[in-house]
Length: 339
Image (cartoon, rainbow, N blue to C red):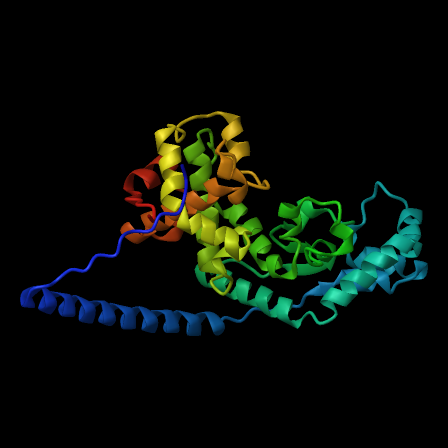
């Protein structure tokens, strides 16, 4: 059974030789730590110096303040937002729609001051360009999507759309009918993690995802890219967990892995495993009494730890790692789950 276990605390007497050895190791570790801090500081300076020309276009506010006579100008500037399938009368009716007014008011109340979100988006693009120099900064445009939480962020080579009405806060009245596990990520703090996820999907080349292990490694690669691109976000924000859900996953990592191994799940191709451990869900399905204590997508979390272990034990350019065969990564990861 998966559960948190505490190790016994042992009192051990050391010889003088052992004490000297321990002191040397502590000094060595301190030197390594200082070198790591210096390297991290240099990296941060280089990233902050990267010029990112970012001007977030608030189309949502522009449309909200427009009248029918402004429609030709809007369509000229944002042709990709106006489908030819719909006549102008549809857009004009939308401008007058009371529900649209409610959405506009709600978004304005949450994002009236957009500076924090904008600074995080800029910081994301600075990190992205540091690790991917040829990439160009796209047009970033905020829109409303009638609360379509399945398409919160859309990324193309030149345009990024962010639906602000899907980030109003988990307790917003518009989300009352949604499941709790969905609502918890409809917050402003998830805009940048979602943006990073959308880019990661485009970067990772892994066409075959047939086994449970394949799926875990694929999402592990995504989350590792988030470690590089959004280190200013917490780990639980990167994966879309609450803080308590992330701590549960850390505390039970060994037992989760033990369950996967003992039940010989890694090389199974059963679609049900994807539903039980990879897809967003209220909880993961171990078919045990404690299921409801667990967060969903626990397979993604384990895949993340495997990929991190691989990169720690096999220093590899990240752009090579994300194209590697999952089995190769797993075989060389030397993954030892925390106990």
